[in-house]
Image 1: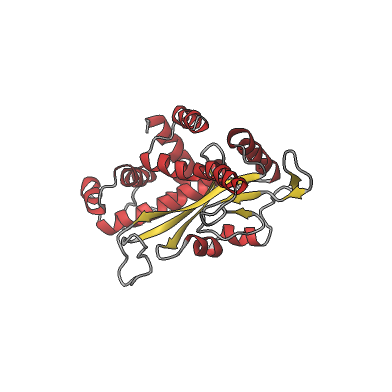
Image 2 (image 1 turned 90 degrees about the horizontal axis):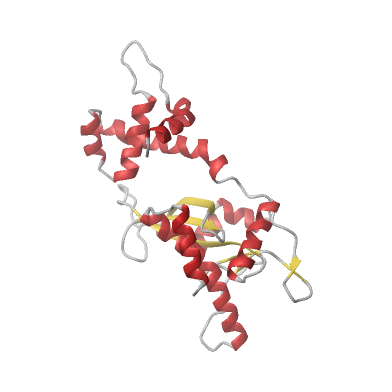
Length: 263
């Protein structure tokens, strides 16, 4: 991160992380608080290492990281991840049709387990099927790898379907509160069909949630459908891979698009 980027981020979140100076002690300034949080997020250093580097207390670093992360989210979510409106859903569907040949698709959804150290006295709540401890990142991704909606914090023991059901997104989807476009006909077909999110077998089949045909004894038409759905659904898996690698430049996204379109 350049100095200019840091100053710009500080100007946005600074008022939210500034603490009052009292007669008893001077508070840590917003620039240092933001620096501590970014150091933790960028390097993954332990709280104790960062506390030693900045000469502050261990518990102080823990509190700063939590508060600054919440401030960054609340200050930037409206600009970088606004809730899509109907016209944006239509634009996403046009991208899925143009790039991946899957009409009436407004997003690919999946869950990603983020490994954590099990909290004290948490029992098996965070223990997942892989044998580690995690929280779940549930994400909706458009046709160009962009995260449109996320839900973070579900217990690692939860299935993808259970995570969806208990999330704000899942509840909004169930109650038709996402402002999705009205049903529209598929290319070359008659009759209006709903706009859908594509997912894997772990998610339930719903009016606005499409999953592949199960089993192996499938007809040629069903196999073609599963193939097309898989192409569209891989957007969310690729987005998780790009996020994990930290390589999120526009050039890399275009390279991935060209590679997948040639598949």
